[in-house]
Image (cartoon, rainbow, N blue to C red; front, side):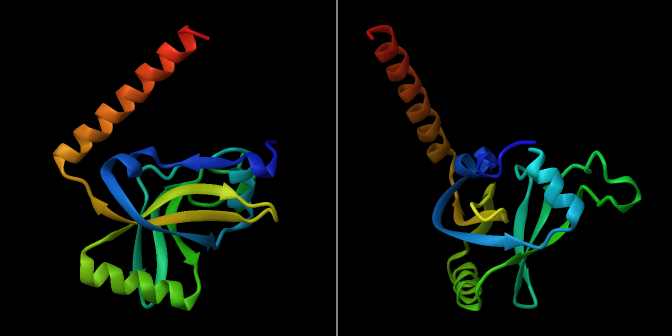
Length: 153
């Protein structure tokens, strides 16, 4: 089993496809086998997206694999899960989505120091094709400079 502070599942696709404007930390409503599976290092949020229904925030397509010792009480790997945020934060997210055309994207899944699973969601604006090219160029330049600096050390 992995230490609880070591779980840090990133959504790298979100940083490439979207420009993240604002970030929020949300709790997740999970069943027992789901949290055990996350603590074992399982989970993927690369295909996940968030939506608001009836004044509450949900995440869909977040994949948490079945727990290996779950037996008959195991969970569905891909299902809709409720996110826990303060009412003020939910209202702020909802208003920004409606007026500016932003999207709520999960960016990081982690276990905090108290042992709770948290999902960092970001308000993102979709990047255009030329913005993506700039991101690729910056990444390549950084990789090149790191390689050159490593060579001279």
